[in-house]
Length: 252
Image 1 (cartoon, one colour):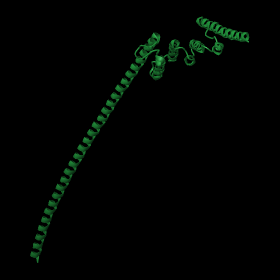
Image 2 (cartoon, rainbow, N blue to C red):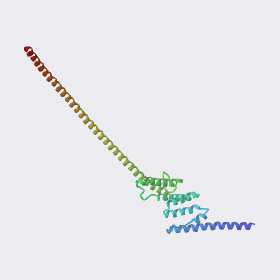
Image 3 (cartoon, one colour):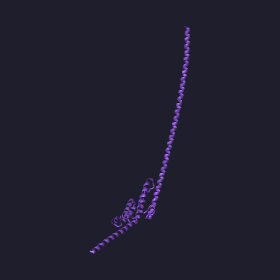
Image 4 (tube, one colour):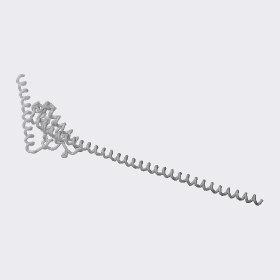
């Protein structure tokens, strides 16, 4: 009975050792192919069989995807590696690569105004990746010097974009102020023109009223003169009648 148990134990140990050896050599083959520039290696077999250190397979897969330019997929695989109970001392290299894969998703013209907001979002995401689990810290005393250096580089890029954004906002504000001043000046000019027009209209109305008064006065003067002329004519007519009456009486 003991012999059978020992044999079973030996077989289990042999299988475990064999699996570990297989994983080791298979992983070495993947790494070798990767270093030679062959990024088409599929290590799904290692991912399936590696029970004890599955993060290694995810990490290698992520590196291959990174080299192939499939950055978003690489970020997912790096996250899978972190989620596989990765040892703390190995987590920072994974996070560094994960942050690099995130930054690699920046547009070539990432500083352009139309890309600036998206670029800042990507850079902040990459920075946050390094800050998790204190691979890098706000104070610069993280677990990894490489993570700290990469964080500083990312922060420099963020500052550059933020400065460009602020300059653009200042220029827009300045242009808006100039436009507002121009609008105010145009409104003032229009108001001045309107006031001038109103003044001219008032002057014309005053002149018209003055002319009307003069005309009315002239008409009254003409009417008065006409009355006087007619009164004189009546006096002459009355005188003639009286003379005629006198003559008539003399005739009678």
